Image (cartoon, rainbow, N blue to C red; front, side, top):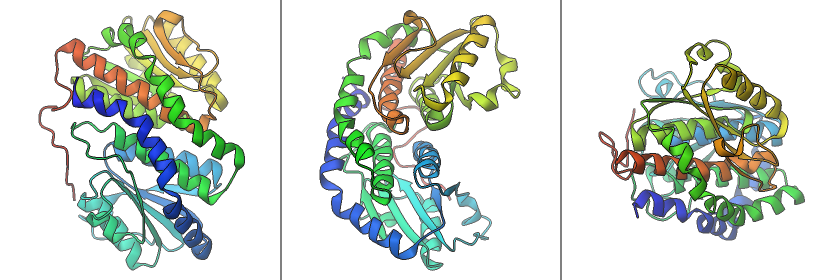
Length: 344
C-alpha cells in the first residue's frame, strides 16, 4: 500500500482526535475573539492549504456572516507593502508551518495588533510561534508528498473554530458524526474504478460550486500532482462564462456536489455537458445524484452542506490514488516536488 493511500485511511481517526483534544485551543480562540471583536477574517495559505482557506471563505461567511479575504502573501514579502489588517482575525494555514510568505502575513498581522491564529501540524514551527493562538492538526507525520490528512485536518480545524465562535447544538452534533461519515466514504473506494479509468489524462476539468468549490480545486490538484493529469478546477458559475468553450465529445469532466443551495446549478451543468458529448462523472454527498449510477459515486452522509467538503475530500483523494495506480505512477513521490515547499 502506498503511503498516500495509508494516510487517506488515517483520516477518520484524525478527525476523532481533533474533536477529543482541541477543546482548550478552541476555548482560547472564542475568548480572544470575543475580546478583540474582529469585523472580518483574512486567511493566508499556499497549495492544498489555500483550498482549505477557500473553504473558510464560505464557512465563516455563512456561519459568522463576516467578510473573508484570502491574503496575497507577496504583498507582505516581495512588494513589502502589506495592507492594513486592523480589526481582522488573521489565520495562517500550513502543514509544516515553514512557508515564509504565510509566516510573513501572520507576523505582520501580529505587529499590527490583529488577532492571529495558526493551523499547523507543527505547533512549535515558525508559523505556530508567530501566531497568538494555535490549533494543532494532530495528524502525525505526513510522509507522502501530496497532502491528504493535513488537508482534511485543516478543514476540520476551521469547522471547529466556526463552531466555537457560534455555538449551535445541531452543527456540533454533525461535527461529532464526521469520523463515522468519513469511514462510510472510505467504503465507496471500489466503486471509483470506472471514474479513475476515464481520468487518466492528459486533461480533465473538475467543477464545483459554493462550499465544494474548494473540493473541486483540491481534487484537481491531486490529479495533477499524483498522476500528471492536467486538471483544472472552476466554479460552475465561472465555467459557463467562457471556459465551457473547451467542451467537446469525450472530454472528461468531474463534478463534485452536495445538493443544498447550489444543487440546481450542478444539475444544469451536468445536463449541458452531457448534451455536448463530454464524459461527465461525479462525486456526490446527497440524497440523489444528477448522473447515472455508472458515472457517479454517491454517499448520503446526512451532514449539513457546510461539512460535506470533508467527506467529498476523502472520495477525491481515493479517486486520485486510483488514477495514479491506473497510470503506473507512484503517488508518494511526484516528480519535481518536495514535501515542504518554501515560497516568499
